[in-house]
Amino acid sequence: MAPAAPAMSFVPRFSITNRIAAALTDIERARDFLDAATLSDAWIHAMQSTALLLEAHHTTHIEGTHPTIDEAAELLAGASVPSADPDDARELLS
Image (tube, rainbow, N blue to C red; front, top):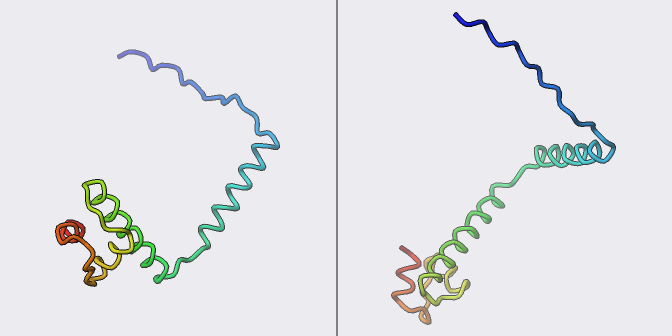
């Protein structure tokens, strides 16, 4: 059996300057703030709805559909939008 290799110790070569310490303090404060923040269910629902609307509108727009974001919002809400092309509406809702 071969002898074990000698253990190598890690000796980092850096120093924490006042600038680094201040930045770390800012990061810690921001993290504490975000950890303490609570998001309301209504806010989360609104953000999810907005994300769905934007994703649906932009991805179908890339494919050539023409509804505006407002028309897309109405279509996703189940409203009838007479000015929207039926094929575009079907694509948005699929």
